[in-house]
Image 1: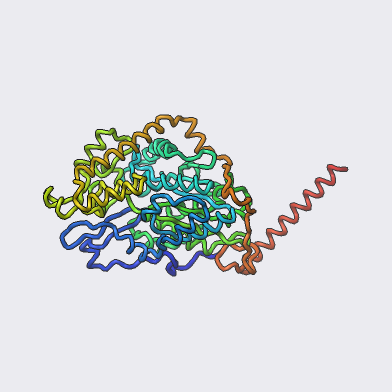
Image 2: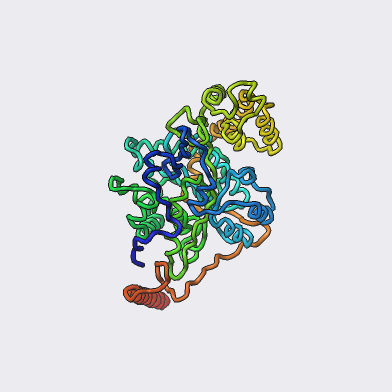
Length: 487
C-alpha cells in the first residue's frame, strides 16, 4: 500500500480563500454541500447564483454547443431540455464518457439523496429526472446512494432511527421517478457499507488528509470526525469495484470502469477530492478511473433565485405530497415575482424572467421549447402579467406532481425489495456497437502497487514476494490434493 498523501493541496480541490472582510459582510456567494446562497448586494438583497463564476472557481468546463452537437451525433438523440437550456451547464470529463459510449465500453451512473424528510420536493426531482433520461439514453447501470449516515452526522438533532425511517419513504419516491429496476441498484449507507465497499472507503480515507478536508469542506476543530470522514464514503460509490454484484469480482478489470455523476453543482467538492485520490490509486498496476461529473443549476426556492429549496422549510418548496390547492396557494403567496409594482408599469417595461420564480420553474418542467419562448417574450414585453404567469406555472406543477403521486401509489414492498436487493444488473449500452471487453490499462513498472506513481517500495516488493510464495504453496497443495484424489 502507498503511503498516505502529504498535505499538499489536491489539484482539483483548491478553493479560493474568502477575504475576511467579504466573509464578515456575508456579501460573497456561498455554494457548498451544506450552504447555497447568492451574493448579498449593497442593498441587502440576495442576488441570483453566478454559475459562470462557479465554473471559474471550481475549475469545471462549461457545456457548449460543440459538446451538445457531439452528444447528438454519438447517441442519435436530441439533448434533454435541461442541456438545451443550460440547466445542466458544467462538467468534468463528460467527453470521456461519450468516448466510451462510442466504443460501447462499460461505465455506470451514480447519484444520490440525503434522506432528511418524509417527502422529496420538486427540487430533488430534477436531478433524478435527468439521471433517468441518461439511463434511458445510454442504457447503463445506475447506483443510487442514500446517505442516511451523512444526515445523522451533520445534524445535531436527528437520530439514526429517524434518518433510516426517511430512507424507506425516499426510496419509494425515487422509484416513482420511473427508473428501470433491471439496471438500477438503490442502497442506504447504513445497510450496504462493508466488504468491498468498506475497502474502497478506507482506500480514499487513507489519501485525504485532515488539512485537505479542512481546505475542501471548511471543517474546523469543532467538526466531528464523522463529518471529516464522510467524503471517503460518498466517494467510494464512484468506483465500480465497490459493487462486485454488478461488475464482477475481478478488481483488476473493474477499477478501470468509470462512472458519470449527475448532480447539483454544490456536490462538486466531494468529487473533486475523489477524483484527486483516484489519480493516485492503482490496483495491481491498473489505474483507478476518475469519475466524470455533469452539474445542474439549483431549482430556486419560492422566495427567489439566490437560494435553493429546503426540505425543512415548507414555504420554500413544492413537495411531492402537496395537493393541487397547496401548490396553487404556495406559488401565489410565496413565488418571487419579476414583475413590476403596478400593472401600468409592467405593461410599459415588462417583467424580468431571470429572477421570476414562476418562469424559472417553467424552464425546468415545461418541455416545449417554443411554448416557453413565447411565454418569455410575452412576459418580458409586459403582455403577460405576473398572475397569468403564475397560473401557467401552477398548472404545470400540478400536472407533474399528480403524475408522480399516481406512480408513487403503485410502489409496494415488492418493488422496494426489487430495487434494493443485492443482485446482478443487466444493460446493453450502445446498440450500434458490440460490447467491448474491459480494457485493463497497464502502468509502466507497476505490478501490484496501490499508489499513484506505480512504483513499488522495498517493503511493498517484500510483501508482494511473500504473497507470491503463499499463492505458490496453495497451488502446490491443490495440485497434490488433485493427484491424491485421482489415485
